[in-house]
Length: 151
View 1 (spheres, rainbow, N blue to C red):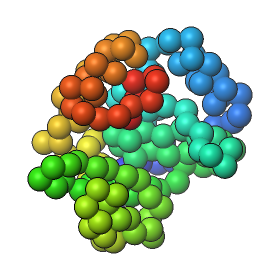
View 2 (tube, rainbow, N blue to C red; view 1 turned 90 degrees about the vertical axis):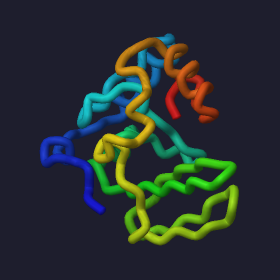
View 3 (cartoon, helix red, strand yellow; view 1 turned 180 degrees about the horizontal axis):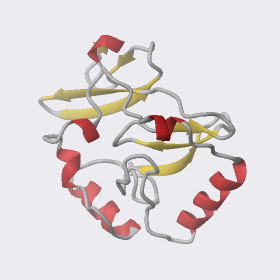
């Protein structure tokens, strides 16, 4: 497993006004912006969790950054069963249990980031487009997305 971030990406800063600007842009139906690291669209967005933490993340290359902090490492898990495909993202020392089949994954079983795996089906996503274009694409793949069209 490798950290998918270059030194330039690890040096990026991110403040609360940056997060608010990105969030408001999407709320006004702006096109999904490219990730500041991999430049891919449709996977990067400002995000918030139930605890109130604000961050930005790209689920394509692994760029993850809390407001007011430097980017940090995240690992990716994928479970591909006969009747499901589930992915999740965790800290580098966290295990994960697939919510569909109960399979337990450990950090040494982390999946490659789609940016590093040219055969990964996420490379089929539109290279540019409006929020609706991304929602339509993910719907055809049976992937649940945010209201902005980003998984």
